[in-house]
Image: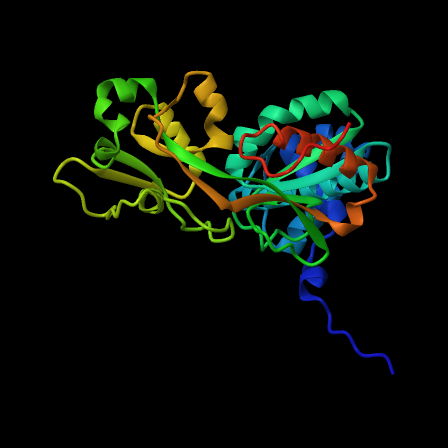
Length: 331
């Protein structure tokens, strides 16, 4: 005997999508006639659908004054939700349609910092060489809990243990050193020494909300790696100041704005040093050769032409990093 299914209250109480579609068009154009033209129906059909929707909801959605219409407060609330829902549905339909068409598509997931400072600068060369491949970039610090429906083909992060159905390729290790702007160094020349560095404004990357990035390096860890035990919360009176943020993009922008000294990960800040926007302070550095970054890919993609094209290009690019542990693909 078939199991009885209880009515789905959300679906049962949903108003007619045809009526909602007519409402969204009328609200968008603030005119029933233009809404009818946009949907290729009659004005009478638009008016009827909206009356039915208002009856279903038990409120007026429009203030009517002759031919002009204006959303009521309830209408504005309903329009904001309905329009966004239709946009999401339309975009999902477009993605499904595109997936069966000519272009190949890859979804790459990485941290916001890696996307902003490394990947985005190099992707144009990939697009130029491979116009038939679309790349979607999803940035997050929460790698273990993706949004529903998001299934990246590739992860680029520091998690060495691949999730089920994925394989990992080691890329490069961390090389970390202090950086500041030329103006900040000019105004605070003492920061070029380890002693001076301990008594200045330190822009500090905190681990909060970043637990899934992997092992964390902040100023305390970095100084400790050099044999210096420092309490970030207590410093010489009026000398050491700490600003904490869990977003590396924020710290880089503050560093560029001459607001202090930040730790710089070589692969992320090297282009800004080359441009002269940032300066590396002295020869102070720490290499964490055990802290590797990985390219993790879905097993089902290993024979995919688009994936293999991207992987070859990506590994070739990574092999140019001075901290690379991966070898460039053979030509």
